[in-house]
Length: 142
Image (cartoon, rainbow, N blue to C red; front, side, top):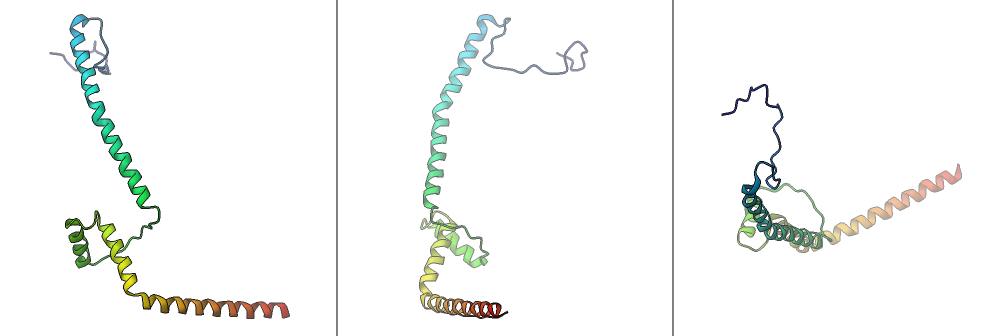
């Protein structure tokens, strides 16, 4: 048994490399090295598949989000439950998708309101332009 306080041993542990052969291991090291190489090689297809899935998901998200905007909103507990139900039923893949759908449908349902808002905004812009014109005339007189 080794003594960790042995003054003849270095304080730093030597790194272990499973693929490195030491002179004192000789022929006994070959099976261990080939086993390590096989283990690594057997994980390559799994790693590549995982990378492929990650890339595919990232591209899918990027393509689906090209015209989307992210908006953080607070919702009631009841609204959260309803969003969760839509996801659990498989109607949407996420709460964000469910919420986006409901926001779009709410806007469609409130078309008359948004028409009135647009008209009022046009009127407000017209009044602002009129006021800017009055101020510009006053500055010319001075």
